Image 1 (tube, rainbow, N blue to C red):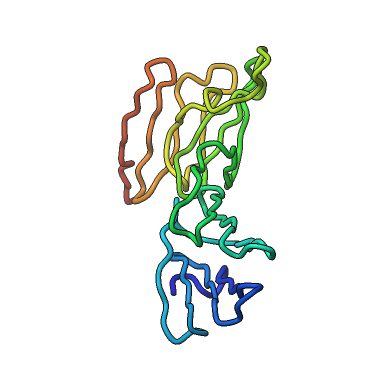
Image 2 (spheres, rainbow, N blue to C red):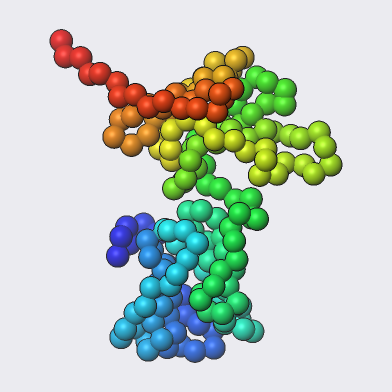
Length: 179
């Protein structure tokens, strides 16, 4: 099991003690008390929590690094996660625009800029979210008075520069100098 030491979870079906779920990087299920295991399909990776409906164990909600999904058939099919506005942010920053934007790197996802409010009746929607620089490990840097260019770190030391007006980005690798 990947990373079992910090987020592995075990759940037992409330109506059948031989059905066990183990959540980690994959989500696993045993139907025979732990002798054999199958991998559950899912909507994202890195599974963290599970709620099993006590009245109907075929219905459950699973949470993961991408949000949460609902199943009514023991995990054969899942609801979409795109209609549930959830994200896990490592760190956030804001600019000085009105309304201000919230910038953050999402767990196992992209970094984003989100308008803090909308002036129409629909409120903040997925259309209020736009891509930004870097990936899940990004620290985002920009001029708070003019955040056209956002710099964000990513894996392997890359720095991405995102131009919010052009909706384009460029990756660069910083040069290391020795003295």
